[in-house]
Image (cartoon, rainbow, N blue to C red; front, side, top):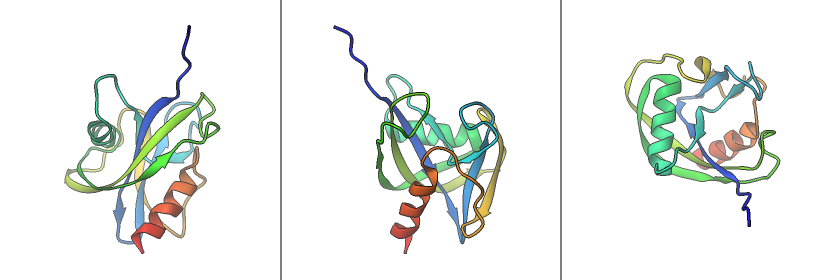
Length: 133
């Protein structure tokens, strides 16, 4: 018997006053679009480790987890196949903003001037703003 399971991912949200950190995707799907920093969890890695690793690789920031925002599991959220994303709110501990790994660029955007977003990240950001209020 073969099992076809969803792939686990993580995404991180970093607010700075009325801005949010986004990365511009270097690779498909959504190449060139903006997204929350994040990615696939590696085998043997905890979600909490994965989100901090992904944020560091894509933005240059060392972070700590402030809280869990939620889990996003719509089977249609990623055109590559069914993924489940565990999304965290993070705080910057150190580092300098520097796009790396799968990110072509990384920058803060005003929450009222967001670009077109990849995946279901507009919905995730809306949920994060509700939690923040």
